[in-house]
Length: 188
Image (cartoon, rainbow, N blue to C red; front, side, top):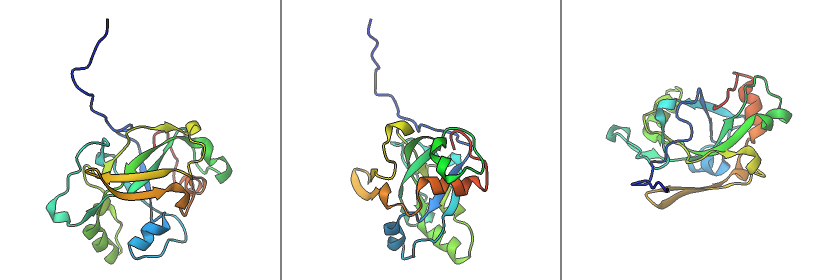
């Protein structure tokens, strides 16, 4: 006997409560130029809280008081095993897979934080500001994670196109430098 769904299932984010969401600022020269700044000379990290995560088709809520809010397509690297002080040449062994994260950013709040030399926390962390997914693609299914085309659409309109080959800092270096500061855990 065949069982049919009455309606299409809701697609949720592939990770709902990771321990950490660690992000990298200005890792694409094109994006740095769009924001009127030079690419950083070393990785510049910030974090998002897991309360921001929603599914890839969920609605992003934007409070009017936030002013301009921009989407940013990002390759999300999902860690597969615990590691601390991971050497660059072993870093890819810690990658379980990849997905897409929309790093939603409130630009007015971010500019104010920069002006006051504060972290970007308020600009990056609001419920719904991290659409994630829809899938995690296993690391072994990706021949070269530094050659992936990514397209971000808002209501069907293309807003951003990137290729991971344009990343300033590559995945092994990012894993190495992050893991020098804190342990990386499965699902981070």
